[in-house]
Structures are given as C-alpha cells and as structure tokens.
Amino acid sequence: RSRFISFITGFSILGVTLGTAALIITLSILGGFEKEIKDKVFGFMTHVQVQGFQGQTLNDHQKSVALVKEKVSGVKGISPFVAKEAMIRAGDNVDGIYLKGIDVANDISQTRKYMKEGRYLTSNSNDESEIVIGGKLARKLNVGIGNVVIVFGLPKGEGNFQPRAASFKIVGIFESGMAEYDDVFAYVELSRAQKLFGLGDGVLGYDVLVDSLTNAGRVASEIQTLLGYPHYAHTATQLYRNLFAWIELQKKPAPILLGLIIIVAVVNIIGTLLMMVLEKMQDIGSLKSLGASQKGIQQIFLLQGMFIS
Image (cartoon, rainbow, N blue to C red):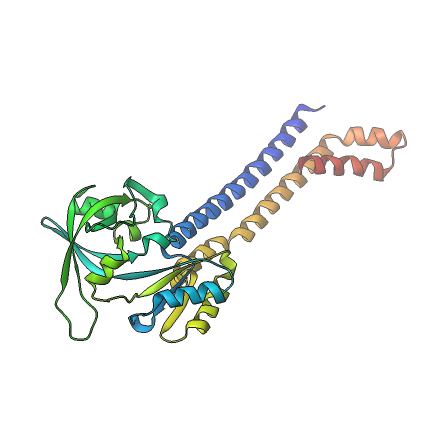
C-alpha cells in the first residue's frame, strides 16, 4: 500500500509504454512510407515492364499481348505503350517531358487515381488530341484544363534529326506527390504517340500487372523466355533498385531498436523490484517469521514483475 512503491511501479509502466509506443510509431511510419512509395511506383510503372532491347521497336504487339495472356500464369493485365523523351511548349514556356502513349481501352496504370483536375484520357474517335500532365509541370508551364500545348518529338530512325510537332489539349492534371512523376510524365493516346515518334503500328514496350508482387520476378522471366529477343523484361523493383534498397535499409535498425526497448524495460522492472524489496524488508521479515517460505515470497515479486511487463 506504499504510495512511493505505487508511484515507482506506475513510472516503470509509463517508461515501458513510451518506449514501446515509440517503436510501434516508428515501424508504422516506415511501413506506411514503404507502402506509399510502392503504390506510386507500381502505379506509374506497373509490376513488370517489357521493352525493346536498346530501345528497339516491337512489332505485332497484338500478337505478343495475346501470347502472354494465354501462356503466362499470374498476369492480370498487359497494355502496350510508347514512351520517349520529348519537349513541351506552352507560349514562351518550354520544358522536357517523358511522353507516354497508352492504349486507353486496356490501360492498367493507376494514374487515374491521382487525378486532381479534369479527367483521364478516354478512347475517342474524333481528331482532337488530348494530353494529361502532372501538377508540377502544369505550374511550370502556367497552363490549366483546356489549354493547348505543343509537343515536339524526335522520330525513331538513324540519321533522322528532324523533330515532329503536334498540338494537344490538356484534359487532366494529376498530382501524385512524387516530383519525379509530377514534373516529367505526360500521357497521350497510343496512336498519337506512334504518329509523333514515327513508329507506325509499332510500340516500345508493354506494362504488365501481376496478381501478386511476389510473382513479378517469375512472370518477367517467363515473358522473357516466351517472347525472346528483342524483348527485355524487368520488374519495377529491378528498375528502381536503389530506391527499394534504401527502403530496406531503413528497416534494418528495427531489431536494434526492439532490443534497446527490451533492455530499457528489463532495467525498469528490475529497478522497481529491487526498490520494492528494500521498501518491504520489514514486511518480508514478518512474513518469514510467520512461516512463509522463501519461494512463496519470491513468487510475489515475480507476479509484480509480470504485472509491470
């Protein structure tokens, strides 16, 4: 019934609580950060990406898509794309972009989730060319929904240095929170990108969505074997190796933190029990004189330690 002992016991519990809370919060932040990064990276790049070796054009993409869907298990979706560096101009403002032409009808990217203004690309039969750009790029170009921009692209082919230009109407602005995407990425319909880069009916790669991230490596390997040269398949983890290695590095100290919290908890509990023994020495002597066994008295303090734990 000693108030001092009750205070010390409560203080010990509070110390262990704060230490454990700090560990849980830290691990939760790291886990949430990792999930957010993965969601955005995989949302823009998908789980597996197939490209032409050294940027070669891939022909007969309809046949390749059908073959992958039929022969490779674990594939939830596959979509051809054309993606190249280009220049974008709005008035006197000019900037470099990574222009990606997508098959809107079969698009599997998660970009539409991050739309801030306007709408995402739609399959339309009219002659109007539409473009979706990142919020940071829109602010740099000082443009908004409905504005027209000019995109300059360099057609593929050796010795072909005459750029092509095409006008696009901004129909949507996305905001992912990652500057690497918001400042650079722009999306147009696949046929518009093919025409701008002079690819005819060819594409530069395929985005592949798998049913489970753990299957990404196997799916990439099977696609590589199935389609062969000049196809080159790699996972988003391989493409962003440094980023994911950094995330894993952030999680390395977790066992050390856990060990330190356990040590602090043990020291707190031992200190509390020792103080309790010193405070209760007369009571212990009285109990022993009344016939209490040493084991029985030890169990009292063990139960107190377990209660604090």
